[in-house]
Image (cartoon, chains in turn red, purple, green, brown):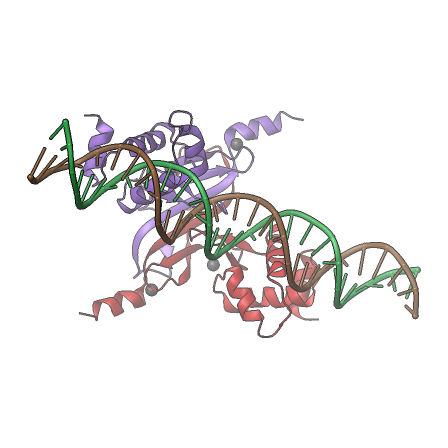
Length: 139
Length: 139
DNA sequence: TTGTAATTTTGTAACGATTTCAAAATTGAA
DNA sequence: TTCAATTTTGAAATCGTTACAAAATTACAA
Ligand SMILES: [Mn+2]
Ligand SMILES: [Mn+2]
Ligand SMILES: [Zn+2]
Ligand SMILES: [Zn+2]
C-alpha cells in the first residue's frame, strides 16, 4: 500500500481514489491551490470529477487536521497539506505564494498573554526576489 | 470642523455624511466589523444607507490607506481603521477579535531574506482568557 | 439665486465562491 | 449475488461582493 494511503487511513479517512489524488496534488505541487486550480488540473485525469467532491474532500482534510486553510487572499480560500507552522509570502507582482520559516519562540507578543493559542498564521505581502530584479531591469 | 473631517480631507477623501459616519463607526467601535455589521448598525440612524455605499466607502478607505483589511475569517472581509502594524486574535469560542501588539523587529524569518516586505499580517486563533475561565467553571 | 456639470449615493442585477441536497454510483460485508 | 452503507456527482440555492446606471446631492460659475 502506498504511503499516502496509509497516511489517510491513519488520519481516519478512507482512501478513495479521489481523495488520494487530491491529497497527492497538494503534496506534490505545494502551490497553495484554490479549489478551482485543483479541480481544473485533476479533470484531465478524472473527467467525471465533481467540484463538490473537491470541496467535500478538502473540508474533510481540514477537519481531520491534514490540511490547513490559507487566507492570504481576499476572496478565495487556498489549501496547504503542509500543516507545520510556517509563514506565507504573497508577491503582489507575480502573485506566487512562497513558504517561509519563522521562529515562533522568538515572537514577542503583548496584551494576550493568558490566551490559549491554537493556530498561528503569518502572512507577508510584498515583492519577491525574482520580481525585484525583473522590475529593476525594466529601466 | 471635526477632527474626523480633517482626517478624511488630509487623506484625499471628501467628507460626505456617509463617509464620516462609516469612519466614525470603525474608530469608535474598534470591533473589526464586516460590511454587514456596519450597514445594519448605521441603518438605524441613516435609513436610506445603501450596502453598496458601505462597500464603496471601505474600498476607498483601503485605497487611500486609512483602513486595513483583516482576513482572519474564511469567507468574510473585516475592516480596521487602526492601520498600525498589530496582530489579531480570534477566539474560537466567542468569536471576538482582539488586537495585540507584537515586536516586528524580533520576528526571525528565514528563506525570504531578499524579498521586499510591504504588509505583515499576524493572525492567531484560540481561546481567549474570559472563555477559558467560563469553560473551566462549567464542570 | 439659477443653471449646469461633477460627484456621490442608491437599488438592482450579475457574479463567483461555497454550501445544500438528493439522486446515482461505488464499495464492502454477508 | 444481494443489500446496506458510503462516496461521488450535478443542479439549485446561498452568501458576500462587484458592476452599473439612474437618482440625488453638491459645487460653482453666470
Ligand atoms: Mn505553505
Ligand atoms: Mn485591529
Ligand atoms: Zn514575484
Ligand atoms: Zn472568547
